[in-house]
Length: 195
Image (cartoon, rainbow, N blue to C red; front, side, top):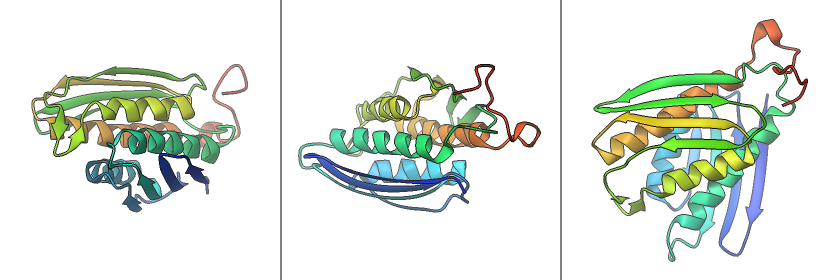
């Protein structure tokens, strides 16, 4: 089992996150940010990652610190759980429809942090959630789980559908990339010999 646990406490957030990268999609998520709870539940289910997460953050200020710090912790958990990346497929991609929204997502677990995010969410808020925080979350995640992540919105008018498509696509794409390739199960998937 590829598992990890991160505890991170700052003046702004107090986070405990447990990840099982070989799970069944079970989640118990309480971030204090309702919309993020919903998105991470989708990510967990579609990626078949088991996630337990509690965050106590300064949401009286706004959701920014909690969202960013959860991205940091989730990235660190994946990096820790996958170890030397031996046997992983490394690459994953999907074009995922969510009603009128269509999201392209591709990942290379390369050891190099790069986010290429081309999204245009029509509204500034979904409920009380600032939609610009989606990219902040992704940036924090990528910086701490050094991957090359491309997310491109091919179509979409409804902000909720676009956001939901992004998190579902990310879960399914990562599931493909972290799967063990039985043909190369004992190998690091790089000519360098390291990721």
